[in-house]
Length: 364
Image (cartoon, rainbow, N blue to C red; front, top):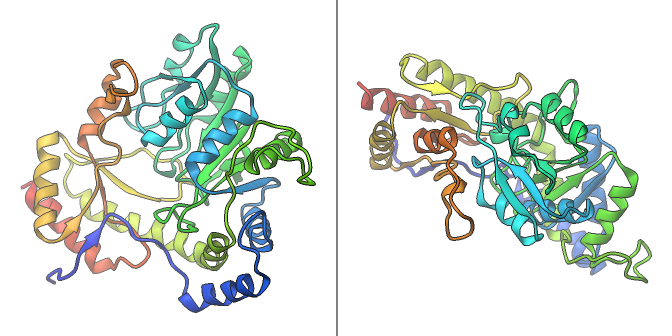
């Protein structure tokens, strides 16, 4: 079947517009647009209930969520993190006055390799900031054990991880703080948005203060060095409508991931991320045998108006305009060979079949 439309790497999962408009009518009638309004509070409550987690602080975006986590834990010094991530992970560390220290990845899981972490720990190390890449859990036990041995804080960048479970609990329950994104491309979106999660009530209150310029809970006194990290009522309305689709979207994503895997496993040169069984299947990354193979496939897809994306390319340790170069062989190699194929709620099964056929035909 010919493809006669543009197909992008992802599109947002969107509730019917009338559901959002109904919520916005209440916003307009109340005249409360921001400042922890009733829809933000409702959104926090519904997300917490869906995930089965206690404390959530909804914020303007996932980048600010990382910055707030660093600030709430009062981190100073070096933060160990992964080079296979989006630049926001690194820029957040730098903006908060800390130094990113890279540890290479496991080329199968694409997550930070715990066996390499301790070699990078020194007297300046204050925290570990792993990323659950493509919603695939990091080795939480190993990372937390290292952190405890060395008295380090742990912040999990779980930007891709809404709906992910680990050991029967939400992945957001791990670490001192976990952060996520509600960007338009994520499993649950508010157009732009994010959140911090923690089991620690004192840290939760500190995050809430930081989100609103450092005010106390009565908004009378400044008690922290904060900033404006608030989510608006408009974004919360989008999120409240979209959360109604979340269970369906998670099931749909898993089915489509399996369909791709079934088709593309016909060619043994293609490799796939080794995933935890409770991954949310946010993306479908394919690891090609070489960068030239990847580029050939990308070109063939583009000619059919299909636009996959090279997440995460290049490896962020190569961004020498902001940091000195440090060699990370596994991350640099994988980053050159990973291509994420289109995967989203409104993508048809026939589209997946056609995309897979183009990939396989190009590699013949």
